[in-house]
Each structure stands twice: as structure tokens, then as C-alpha cells.
Amino acid sequence: MMDARIGAHQFNDCLILDQAISRSGTRAQMTVTPPNDLAIRTTGVCRELKDSVLNGKHGQMNFYQNYIHGHTVLARLLLGVLPVKAIRMLYQLVIYGLLVAGLVFAMREALSRGATVNVLFWLCLFASFARFYGVEYFGQSLGHAPADAVLLGYALWLQAVSYSEQSRPAEFVTAAAVFGALTAIFEFWTGGLPLGIALTIAGVTMAERRDDRLRSSVVQACVSFVAAAAAIAAIKIVLTQMLFGDGAVTSAGSQFFARVAGSAQFNGFPPPTVDNIISRVSQGLGGMAGGQPVLVVMILSLAIVFGAAGYTHLRRTELRSRAALIAASNLVLVLWVAALNHHFYIHAWFMTRIFAWTIATGFALFAMAVATRQSLAPANALPVAAE
Image 1 (cartoon, rainbow, N blue to C red):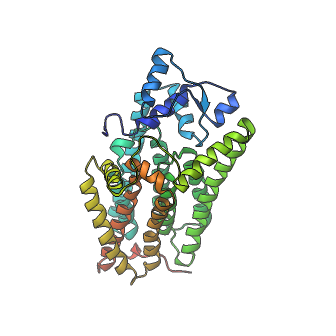
Image 2: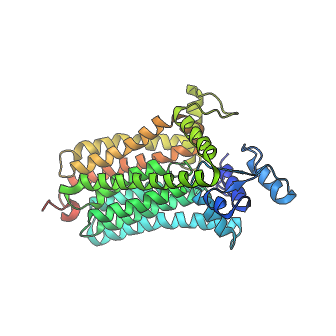
């Protein structure tokens, strides 16, 4: 059961805490990969952590090479000045603050310039994420919150640029690279990468003011995001090989490819039958909105149907290219689930959160279509013509 008081993902939180307080190896090794002394990473990981802290029961120390572990480094730094409860509260307040900031920014812009398509897009995005991204369950998570904060912070920057009079392609490339690097650093395979690419596609689409360089700006920003994330991963691989040897890299790589191929074996999980898939996905959908999976299914369906209707209308307007890119951003999520279907099935209870993006873009496309039908729509609702 999910508990809004302590959050949903205690497995990762206890793993991160154990890694943050464990000490083994050289300073350089601990900087690259945090150690942990959990005997077996099972659903009892929090019990093992408690025994380790209170009773001094330690398992064999090992290094968990599979991720960049920026979340563990951040937790380790904060534990020096704050207790765990305060850190989790801080994380949740940061997530809440970013969501509210996005809404306030959009509403202030609407009051000063009117309900332009840019305002409507960002209003739909931040409102949808505030309700359907499961922040009451995941906002305080030591594993989810850092990556979520990076995502929402980047969205705020794109929102600000979209309201400005001018934008330069170099700005998008630089910002996307920073965003890609931070996403890779804090990513715990919880959806940050596909959401990051989707946000880059749609966000740059709304922030680029000129039609004649729209596609090139989007492509360059996406390439920059992927290249930066890949560069961080490559640095991690090189450092791991230098400090831990070839075996550590081979082990981490084999686990990654096992997840991609669907051959990874997880004891205790039911086989992916239709009934089990529906059950696990329903649990995840419930986590998006306070344990209400039926409501989420209905809202998601509504967003898809009316988003498609909005896109159909926008294809006949000057916003056709922008609408196409916003709609196409959802293909990133579909391809991600298809490529990592085994990972998605096992972790559906938090991976389904990525479909908050589908809700946001569906409502945004519909709202943008309605705005273009209004005869009194503000003049600056349309993109700047090519020079």
C-alpha cells in the first residue's frame, strides 16, 4: 500500500540511505560508486538497514555499480546537517514549490498578455503534473525527488524562454546539455530519461519563436540532451573500470542488457500474464492520483481523445508544425515502454507516472485548438513569422 506520509518507494530510499552511511574502499571509489552492506536486496531492505544502524548487523560490503548515484551523493551531503525526516520534507517542498511556481508564472502571464497558446500549454503541463504525477507519494522520495526537481526546473526555464521576445538556438543546446547531464546523474531508472526527451521536444517547440528554425532547434536540443547523458554514462564506465576493474563494468552492463532484452529474472514477481499486467499497471495508475486508478484511466482517455481532436484542428492552422511535435513527444514514452517492457512491468507502480505527460499534452493540444478558434485571441498567440 502507498502511504502519503512516508512516500511510496521505501525500497530505493532505504537502499540510498544505506549507501549514504556506508563506508568502504578508497575515497575515490566511494565518490564514483557508493557501497552498501545489504545482504540481499529484497523487499526487506529497510529491515536490513534498521538492523545495520541499531544492532550493528552488517552484510558483506559491495559496490552498486548500476547507476550514477547522484541521489546518494546528495543524500550523504544533506545527512551531515539534516535528519532523514527533514530531508524528505525539504525534497517535497522543493517539488511543490516548482509546480506552484510554474502555475503562478503561467497565470501571471495570462493576466498581463492574455491566454496565448504558450500560456495554455504551460498551464496544462504544470496543472497536470501537480495532480497526476503522484507527488504526494513520490515527492519526498530520496530516489525520485532529485530527478523530478531537475525535470520541473528545466520546464520552468523553457516556460520563461517561451514568454520572452527572442530565443537563440545556442541557448536551447546549452540548457539541454546541462539538463541531460543532471538527468543522467540523478536518474534511477524511474522515468527521467524518456520524460526529459519528451519535455525537450515539446518545450523547445513552444519556446522557439521562429518557424523557420523550429525543427532544427528541437533536433539540436534533443541531440544535446542525449549526448550529455551518454557522456556522463561514459565517464562513469571509464572511472568504474579504472577503480574497480573490468568485472564491475561487465556485471553492470549485463544487468542493463538483461532488462532491455526482458531476460532479467526477479524472484517473487508473478509472470507477465494479461491479468498480472493489468493488476500491476492499475496499481501504478492509482499512484498517479491518490489511489484512484479508474479516475486516471478516465482522465488519460479523455486527454487522448480530445488531444487528438485538438491536434486535428491545429493541423489546419499556423501551429501545425508545433502541434505535430507536441503530439510526437508522446512517442518517446511508447518507444521507451516497448524497449524496456520487462522493466516497465516489474516497476509499473512508479513507471506509469510518465503518462502524466500524455495527460498534460493532450489537454494542452485541446486548449490550444480552442484558443485558435476564438476570434478575440491575442495577436501574440501565434508564432513569430520567419524573417
